[in-house]
Every structure is written in structure tokens, then in C-alpha cells.
Length: 164
Image (cartoon, rainbow, N blue to C red; front, side):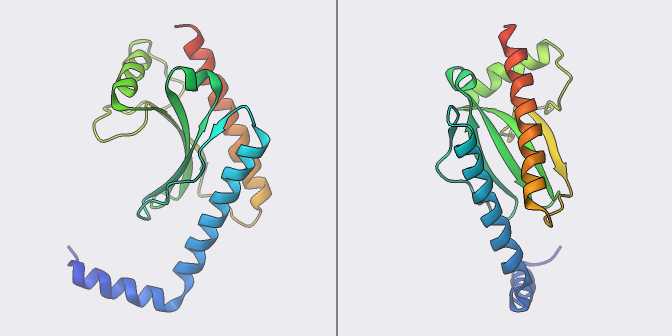
């Protein structure tokens, strides 16, 4: 295992190259524009005013369609840095809500999307991979893919919940 000191030396060496800063800045700018895109295109949704930058582990923002908001649920569009993919998660406003809906999804054997085996230390009820290994050369196409898959996910979640 690498010591903290050795990790910091490697971190500094990588920063000297300048590539990590450029990539991270570009990713954060893209994420900000993606958040703005959803906010402008879906005015009925409550889109978080900012996004969570994370610790180079995950970055996300919330999208709250009215039906889900009324149930104290939210949708998170997430970029997982190490896995290098975009995901969409159904989450609760708090752990009590999260457990209530996680139990419902498991009891009803809804297998359309990934359900975490436990919610301990997890922020999602249901998860779906939007884009694995995204291509950042065409940001409009990437945004379109994220949008289509997210809207499909939201519609599926709303359809499922409307039965209960």
C-alpha cells in the first residue's frame, strides 16, 4: 500500500504535467453545462442549483420530476470517476425514505434496473448505467444519450411507482 506521503509526491508529479487539471476542468465544465441543459429543457423538474464535485470519486446533480418530488424521491445523474461512466440513480431525500422505497423495489422483484444488495453506505435505491466509457469528442451526442436514457429511466420509475 502506498503511503500518504508517496501518494502526495505522485499527485504533485502528475499535476506538474498539467493534463489532470485540463481533464478535470473540462469534465466539471461539461457537467455544469449538462446540469444547465436539464434545467432549461425540463422547466417542470427541480434541478439542483449546483452539483457535487466530489473527491474525484463521483460528481453528480439532482433532477426532481414533480411526481418523484412529491414522494420525496430524487434522480441523480452521476459520473463515477474510477469506473469512468455516467449513471442515473433513484434516491431518497433521506435514509428513511430510501429504505422505504428500496424495500418496495426488492419486495416487488423489480428487476429492470440494478438494485444494490444493501443500502448501508449507498445513496441509491435503483441504479442504471447511462454511458460506459463515454466519448467526450462529441459533447452534443453524449448529452443526447444521457438525456434519452435518463428520461427513459424516470418514466420507468414513475410507471413502477404508479402501481403502488
